[in-house]
Image (tube, rainbow, N blue to C red; front, side, top):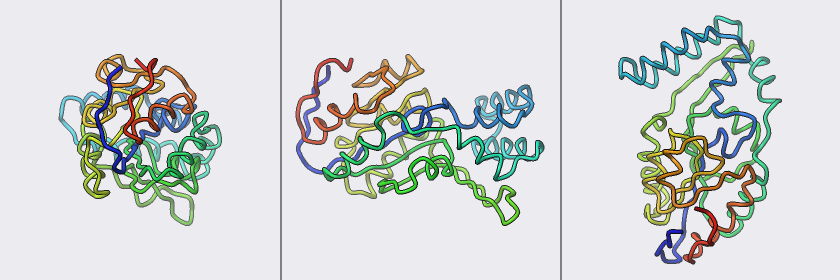
Amino acid sequence: MVEKKAGTERCLVAFDVDGTLVDDTVFIWETLHEHFGTDPRRRELTREAFMRGDITYEEWFEHDLEEFATTGADQRGFEAVLATMRPMRGAHEVLSELHSRGVLLAVISGSLDIVLEHIFPDHPFREVLINHLGFDERGRMDGARATLYDMGRKGEGLEMVARKCGVPLSRCAFVGDNINDLEAVQAAGLGVAFNYKSEELAAVADVRLASRDLRDLLPYLLAFAQGRALPDGGG
C-alpha cells in the first residue's frame, strides 16, 4: 500500500458517476441506447470515429442525442430509465460523512446531470463537471451541452476544480471505475479504482477495491483527508 505523505490541510474528493456513485449502469449512454433501441452499428461507427479523432467529443454527444431522437425518445422515456437506477450501496452515507468532516466534494463525469439530480437531488458537491440535458414544455430534449472533461480530459477537470477550490492536487482524491477515469486517477494525490472494470485503471490506482459498497472505501478517504497512513488491504 502506498503511504501518502500529506498534511492535514483541507482536501477534496472527486467522484465519477456511472458505476461509481450510481449502480445499475456501466455507462449511462449504453444503458440509454439499449433502452431506446438505437442502431448498434451506427453508434459503434460513431464511437470509432471519435477514437480515431475524426469527430470531437461534442459531435459524438450530439450524434447520440440525434440517435435517441430518431426513436421518439422524450422526457418520459428518460425518466423510465432513471427509475431503474439506484445509488451505489453506501453512497449517501459516505458523502454525508465526508461532507460533515469538511471534505470538499466534486463530480467529474461523462454521465448526464439528470442522472445525478435524480439519484442525489440534494447533493453536497461543490463542483459538478458533467454533460447537461434538459427538456422543453412538451418533454422534448432541449438545452443539451457536452462536458469538456471526459475521455482523456478528466485529469484537466480535476486540476481545474482543485484550482477553483484552492486545494493542491496532492490533497485531491479521485474515485472512478473505468478507463475514462485514468487521467484523473493519475493526477490525483490519491487515485482510487472502485468497482473497477479496467485493469489498466487498477494498475495505476493507489487503492483498488472490487467492492460495490462505497462504505468499504470510507476508511481510505478519511485517512487521506486526515493525513494518516492508508489502511492495508486496498491494493
